[in-house]
Length: 108
Image 1 (tube, rainbow, N blue to C red):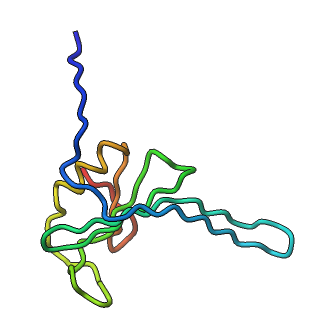
Image 2 (tube, rainbow, N blue to C red; image 1 turned 60 degrees about the vertical axis):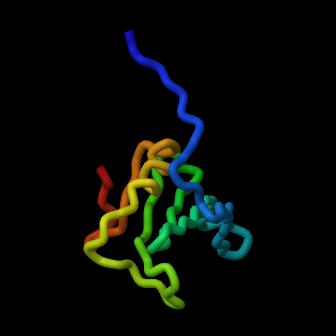
């Protein structure tokens, strides 16, 4: 028999979740429609962003880590992603990816 459990607490919460909707029009014709959520996380040392398009609600893309206090943040290389951020996203999405040098790659 399968074991069932409820988890009601996250190890970290986003600082902010924003819902955005952007449309690209060509005259009266809608060319593209982007409807997405942006999550912003801050840990003791870094910042992260994640974006989930609502028409692909099973997937989220994670960006970062970034320096916490940088004015123009650039992704930091060779730093492990904070497991609390991943745990938060895993509770909500089945596919998590990260932008790599040749496109998006899945995070295991």
